[in-house]
Image (cartoon, rainbow, N blue to C red; front, top):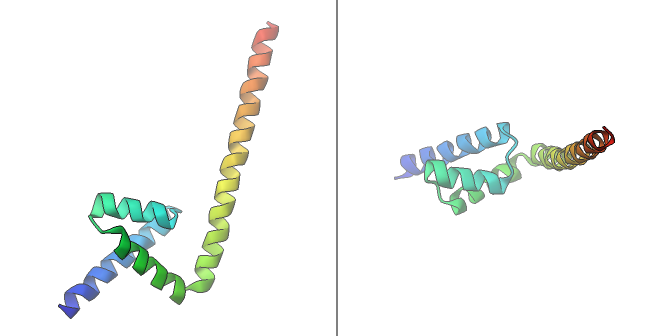
Length: 94
């Protein structure tokens, strides 16, 4: 049992690392692993928390990059809306 549970934890860790590569949040990772790998969210959360403890600096930097990603998305959205408004005002001038 010990070997199989250790290998299961390693599998979950590996899948979490893949989620990190795709810049997923903890919640997104928990949802994805539950849906696609049939791993209960509590397992994913527990392994994620342990990884955070062991790699504190990495996860602090990751959290900052996640926040920047969210800000960039809002900025991109704002620019897109401005462009749509600008384009529609040009169209109405014609």
